Length: 164
Image 1: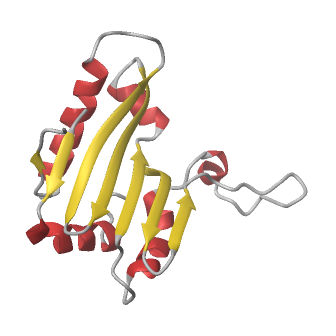
Image 2: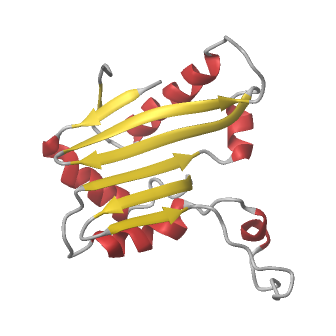
């Protein structure tokens, strides 16, 4: 598991990137929890029209997707946070789209990036799920390397930390 941390000096820059840029837009959102003046919980699972509704105006890809992309959820999160009370806590669980997971590793069922904000720091952790049981850690390594490259390519300054 990858454990990264953004120091307080870079928190504002990262939050601006997360909430106003398209860098994370391709990730699926499994869930968002934000605590400000109250607790907000957003499920990333798509709510599809039932068979009684006409779904002909939905894009084909959107109608098949199980989870919303960050691009679809980001405006709502931005509106909760902007100009209001600074969140005391925020957690976002991103995942890689299933088709992309399969391209990265044959035994990959899911790849997750957890972002947790609390106080003056932001923490990132990674997690994976396998299709079949294996003691091989190559899936974890592939995902960790992908995330490190993603952060470097997008100039996100996070340092690796040891978890207690």
